Length: 323
Image: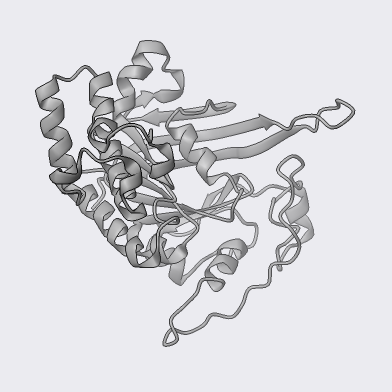
């Protein structure tokens, strides 16, 4: 169970990317990938981040790891201002937060053996050779890779095995916080459950805190403590997993849940109609960014952007007409 205090505190975070230029050299404007996002992640919990492709989920995860720089806002990690860290201070802090890629195999050097791949962070940290070897062998065994296989190359493993190796590499520096960026979406359905259960076991054993980025709502329901729903760069709803699935407040959350595949014995919810196309992040709509597709939109929705407000003890929603 997660502790009460937050490990990550995000306040008014923004990220804009240059939109490039057209054939006449005129700027296409800025792409607002993350727009005024604020939330906390408690110690030991799994916060899932869901939404359609292109809504800014992966960008937000990389901002929290300082892999890309924010345009505005602040990120506090374990009581320290992460956005203010530079140089050696940031380098010393990096072992505390790591990333599990969607396809870890594509992040591996194909000419390196997996023992060297997992060991590399420890070598950069200056750990003794004997300590590095023992830790790598122990961690690979923890994720289900036999020590007789540690001198093989990445192409000699299956997709599920490579993802396990990627998890080992992320955990070898003893991090406190891990961003899991679509960690099972590239795997066969038969393997997904094994990797998800492995992540949950490792979280319990090592006291990890996760941001679990995914578009698979079935996996999210199984793995998360709380869920944050993202649309066009902003968070529109955040709350405890069970409560959000059973009683969603925001029309966009309702539409996502209605589209989730279900077993035949489960009750099928009434479809929530969402019309139109996703607006461009270069020129987002005024007011509520969802109002152009919302089935209950009123005039105020196009004029005033709703803030993320409490709706219940542990629930927040950004909507003028929740429920």
